[in-house]
Amino acid sequence: MKLELSIHASKLKNVAGLGKGTSDPFAVITEVATASNGAKPKVIGKTEVIKNSLSPHWVKTFPVEYELGTPKKIAISIFDEVRKGNNKPMGSCVFDIGEILGARGNVKAKQCKGGTVFAHVRKSQGTGMLRLKMYGVKLKNVEGFMKKSDPFYELSRRADSAGGLTWDNIYRSKPQKNNLNPDWEEAVVELSTLCDGDQDKPILVSVYDYESNGKHVPMGQFETTVNGLTSAASGNTMITLKKKGKETGKIGVKNAQVTGVEDVTAQMANAKVSSPQPAVAAVPVPAPVVAAPAVPPAFNPSAFVPAPPPPQRPTFIDYVSGGCELNVAVAIDYTGSNGDPRRPGTLHYIHRDGQLNDYEKAIHSIVHILSKYDSDCNFPVWGFGAKYGGVVRHLFQCGPTPEVHGVQGVIDAYRQTFQTGLIMSGPTVFTEVIQTAAAKAASSQEQARQQGKQAYTILLILTDGAVSDVNATAACLNQVSDAPLSVVIVGVGNADFSSMRFLDDNSHAGGKRDIAQFVQFNQHSTNSAALSSETLQEIPDQLVGFFQSKGIPPLPPVSRHDNEIMVEPEEEEIDLNIDFGSGGADEEIVVSGGQYQRSMKW
Image (cartoon, rainbow, N blue to C red; front, side, top):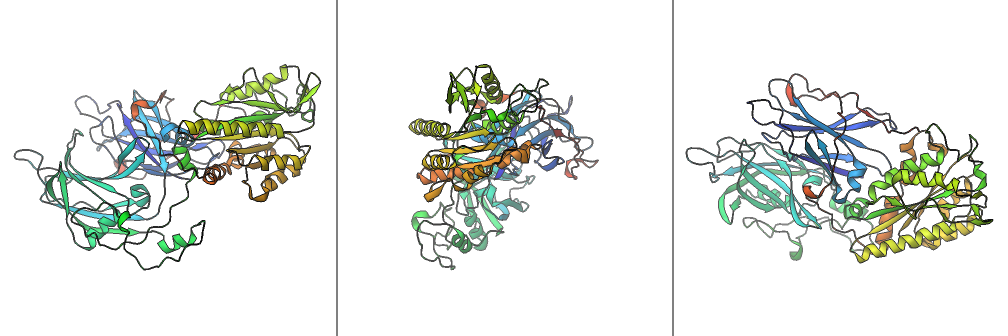
């Protein structure tokens, strides 16, 4: 998954020093090493410097690759820029990318030395770069008598969210001092950041008079598109800058060049369509009148533009960003083949030194990842394969309540079940578990639909051996494949799991959805990240496949104001040994150390 990370902060502590004004903060983003991947920390990049501000909104964004099931943490280290001397630390904090993506609005907040740092991720789509050079002509002075404005401009992308239309600032130029005819330096902006790769998507250009206190004065703005900018450059057309409906100057485009974009004809040839479509001519054609974007008055509306590619298939990120909840249910094998849980070396043995057995390791690794996408973190825990009152039960509740809270709640319910007088028996049958999970999944999605929401369920089955009736289990999976459900089966121990792989490969006969995934624990027993990654890799496509098969599009992205976001407590100081050298923040960044390790015995 290609994501885009943006950050801002509020009420940071001023570290400039007595009589030296207000700090000039910038942030360094570092990918933190984890014990499971053994990699060294890597600097992703650093933001621009915001002068005299303790609540900086940095415009630079950062690309992040993320895979469901693979832990990825980033450290945000904030510094006060000191031109002649060492930069001063203003605080640091660590965010988990999966937790940000799973949070409502895809945003998380953490305390940072009295202030707050916010981290937000969104889907990154589209390719190519825009090289843009603009200049202003006779801009209206807003500085005051005997002074001239210091104009700079910002580029903002349109964000259509559940809260309505907003503009997100993604680029800020450097100011031109005392100049009402500014010639700004060339900007290089990724199209994925500016317009999601859609060159007809509206963008906003805003011009401000720079003020050292951060309270910049608006000088005017205009709405356009990437195609509009390239048209203005090729036609040498001036764009009118307006403020409150009145003209405040002209903006010229010296250069607006798009590079690195995949050929439109190739995109359409590679796209999957549900029915045969007529061939698309490679020659550019006029844009349909009904689809023409808003164009500034000075532009020629009859300009020819390439035909847009077909709509892209929604992704897992689209559904999660729209608030789709991932519900998790856990089913555990209590058959006699697991061995006597009181004897060391058996699969269910509970270690007295706090070490986790293989069942607990699998629970911790997988449920820990999925819990980030479940707002209440309440999970039903079921058992199968044990006798109560002399009767073999293929579905029974684990723990004292129908649902337990968090990963530790699941582990506690698992352990408490051994104290309920059960007799570990057999055979291994989990069709009843699957049917119950499917019914619960369908009910959850229906309740969510009635509330204008979406829900999807993941059933995690932990077992030590093959099911007793493979064909019946395959038929059951096929029968419930129409439910909003994925079934993840983890094989614990050294049994012959060939029949379980058969379920993985052959449970979706007759064109039904593939909802099952089998993973053998022992193949990843020394690496929790590898286990969760392998286990969960098919879920994004399965989730999208369900909703698309029902014609259910993702909901609009959820938007949240800063005051609606729960701020997590401050962490211990993070020392990544970031050194900017003697030349200040513009030199190469060198990073060492900074390893993160889970507090569990794996």
